[in-house]
Length: 340
Ligand SMILES: NC(=O)c1ccc[n+]([C@@H]2O[C@H](COP(=O)([O-])OP(=O)(O)OC[C@H]3O[C@@H](n4cnc5c(N)ncnc54)[C@H](O)[C@@H]3O)[C@@H](O)[C@H]2O)c1
Image (cartoon, rainbow, N blue to C red; front, side):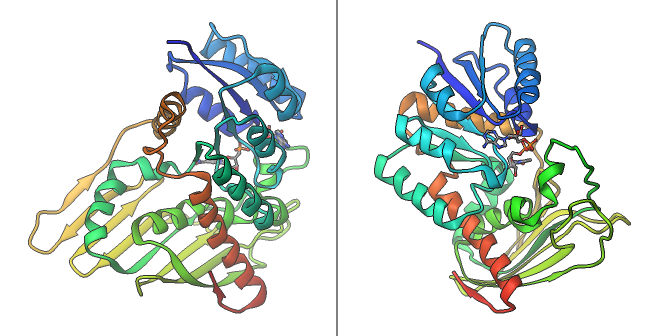
C-alpha cells in the first residue's frame, strides 16, 4: 500500500509533539513543513531527519506553497490561535483533510465560514481534543449517557507565566489575550471540551475574572483567574475555573462530575478517573499511552479509508467548544450571561 503523504503547518512545540507521535507510523511519509520562521523550519527538519530518516520533507515559508508543491494527502495545522485562516483555506481549496490543534481559532466569524466550507465539501477533519480518546472518558461517557450529570466542577490551575522579550515559542503569544484568547480559550478549553463530551451542550454561560494579581509580567494581558458558570441543556449546572496565578502549589487539572447514581472524579493532565457508583465497587482507570499518537493514528486511518467515524472531535464539533469559551470571554467583558 502506498504511503500517506503528510505535512505540518507550524513548526513549534506541537510540531515536536506530533512528529514524535508519528515517529513509528510506517504507512506515512512526511513530505513538507511550513512555518514563517526559517529557524523553526530548519530545527524541525533536523529533528525529522533524526526521527524519520527515510523521509525527505521540504521546508516552506507558507502553507499555500507547501500544499501546491509537496501535494500532501493530509496536513496537521499546529498554529497559534491567532494564525488561523490561510492554512485551512489552502487545505479546503486542494481538498486535503486536516488535523487541527485546539483551540481551532479565535475569530468566530472566520470559524463559522470554515465550518460551512468543511461541511459543504465533506472534508475529513480532526481536532486536537485528545482526551476524548482516553479510556477514562470513554467509560465515564458510557455511564453518564444513561445517568445525566446534575453538577460538574473542574478547572485548570497553575503558576504565573514568565514571558521574556525575544521569545519565539508559545510563551511569546500565550500571555497576550488578543493572540491566545486567554487561559479559558487556550488551555482550559480541554476541560470545556470534556464537559461537552460527557454532559452535552451548554445553553448559558456566565463568567467573572480576576486581574491585577500577576504584576510586571512582560506583554501580559490575560486574566489572572476566572470562574465560569454554565447551565447545561439537560438542566445540570457546571463551574469551571482557571488560574495562572497560583504559585504556592496545590493547583492542577481536575473535573468532578456528579450524577444521581454516578460520580466521576478526573485528576491530572492525563484524566485518570475514579468512578463511584451506588452499590458497585469503585473503578480506577489510569492509562499509560502516548495520547497524541492515539489521536494521530485515528486521523491517519480515517484519511486512508475515507471513513471518519472514529474521529471523536471534528472541526465542526470543536468549533462548538471554541464558541463556549469565547462566550465566557464575552461574559467577562460585559458582566452579563451569554446565551449560547
Ligand atoms: N493538545 C494539546 O495538549 C496542546 C498543547 C500545547 C499547545 N497546543 C496548541 O497547539 C497550537 C500550537 O501551539 P505550539 O505550542 O506549537 O505553539 P508554538 O508557538 O510553539 O508554535 C507555533 C508555530 O507556528 C508558527 N506560525 C505562526 N504563524 C504562522 C502562520 N501564519 N503559518 C504557519 N506557521 C505559523 C510559529 O512560527 C511557530 O513556529 C496552539 O493552538 C496551542 O494551543 C495544544
